[in-house]
Amino acid sequence: MAESRAASAPLLSTSALGRNFGGLAAVRDVSICLHQGELHAVIGPNGAGKSTLVNLLSGHLAPTAGLIQLDGRDISGEPAWRMTRLGIGRSFQRTNVMSSLSVLENVRLAAQAVAGLRLSRLFTPAARENVLVEAARHCLERVGLMGVEDRPCGLLSHGEQRQLEIAMTLAARPRVLLLDEPLAGMGPEEGERFMHLLKDLAREHAILLIEHDMDFVFAVADWMTVMVDGTVLAEGRPPAVRANAEVQRAYLGGHA
Ligand SMILES: Nc1ncnc2c1ncn2[C@@H]1O[C@H](COP(=O)(O)OP(=O)(O)OP(=O)(O)O)[C@@H](O)[C@H]1O
Ligand SMILES: [Mg+2]
Image (tube, rainbow, N blue to C red; front, top):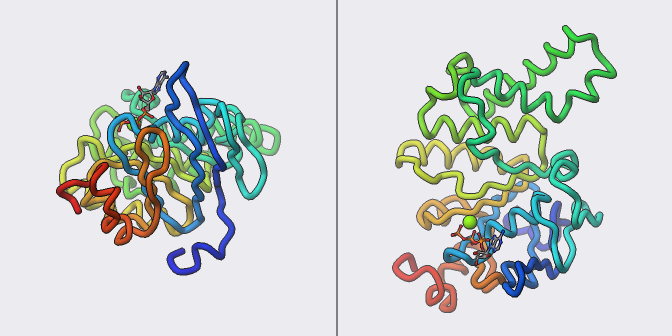
């Protein structure tokens, strides 16, 4: 957390991480640390490599250079399903939500996808069902969606859909949460609620947040990394990043 950051060991870290697409270095020489209890924002202009970085950390892309470590253990190049099992959660995209099923049912399915096999060895089908439903309820409570658990997902508001995506991610019991522009399309009121949810989740997780809304980012981030052209231009606490002349020139402009 804040003052003790340098002293505590990172939960997830990268070292000289890189990913090329043909001749393009979408991510190059990126070394960052995510700490438990910290909301770490990654900002930068379009095409800076932010989503590619998330795809590397979530195992959806394999690095072409460098290391990814979880608790000091090398996990570079592990596939996405392994990363999920290791505790790296990435918010589900809307395409993973089945809109005709209820909110609870979607989260239950997400919980089943991760815990199903383990539970099937330990419990009867009825007991397994109870465990999964309880786990799903817990995730919905966590994100503030318990009032609408029986509603078909297709009828949720935009902000509620995003809360649901977080609940589905939590169903895998992650330690790290990777959130790529979770606010996109939210109104100010929904955004405000979402901000409180992220701050709350950041107490128990290491969160990597990619977001273009600078007012939001500077209000929630404990730590920031600024990427430009695939690499890290600057990092630090929000006030230092805001005051950095290079960052202002490359990205912040009017927000400085
Ligand atoms: N699968 C891919 N194949 C080829 N090039 C890619 C691929 N994915 C990303 N790129 C390129 O890598 C660079 C970084 O893209 P990325 O999506 O990571 O940027 P970003 O920072 O997330 O941008 P935005 O803010 O617009 O979401 C861009 O030039 C992009 O065109
Ligand atoms: Mg992106």
